[in-house]
Length: 116
Image 1: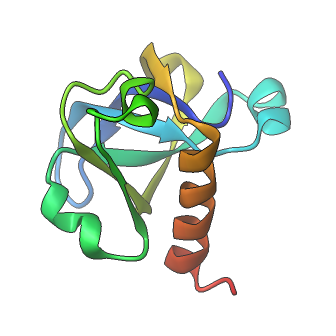
Image 2: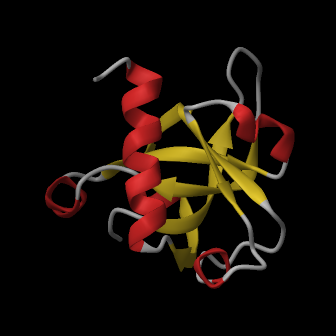
């Protein structure tokens, strides 16, 4: 597993019991992914109306960069919705972000955390 991988993972609900299988992007750096058993992910949603915020990244699956993610529908990476999950909870690898999408995620993470 490496930073920028798009994976299917069980994500717990916040403030409620249960959870849901959903796609997510690995945002933790590669060196930590090798030495610890957990990884940090950013949720992905198919609710593209959220793509207007600076801390969101739109994935258009009709583009070459979007197609390599393995996502089935246009989606939004929610960089304000991070979770630390056990790597064993990652159900499968779906695809990868392009370098340009990784850069957009970097900028969205900065916006989400107020980092200049």
